[in-house]
Length: 161
Picture 1 (cartoon, rainbow, N blue to C red):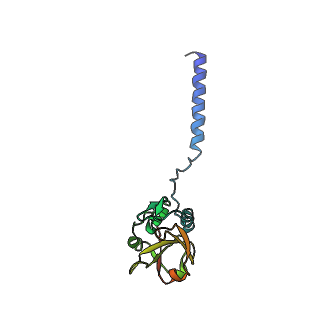
Picture 2 (picture 1 turned 60 degrees about the horizontal axis):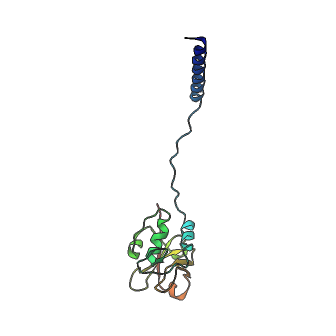
């Protein structure tokens, strides 16, 4: 081996040794799996509010037209939640919430066209909700204290993971 080759080999070995010594003295950064944030009720309510003015469409589940339960499916899907498509199925998910304990993002159920839950909305607070009411209207905010909705209110449901 020539002296030039020996110097290069010695230098390479020195760099390798220093590099390994440096690694041995430091712990590698832990690998952290990305977390999926649990949606807050406020985030769900903000998403629903962003759809205000979308038209009502029977069977609709997209911003070009929603029915009441389609609006709920769409909004919650934006936050990684899968909920049943129909009002009756949505009325069975999550836990019961009294009217006085409603929070943003809770589901609010009403009886409008028959016994039991026939209409669903998303609570904005204890007194207001957003929903897709009926043909010829748009997604809008209403009050739980209005005469019409107050006498038709059944219960609230809160989705939890």
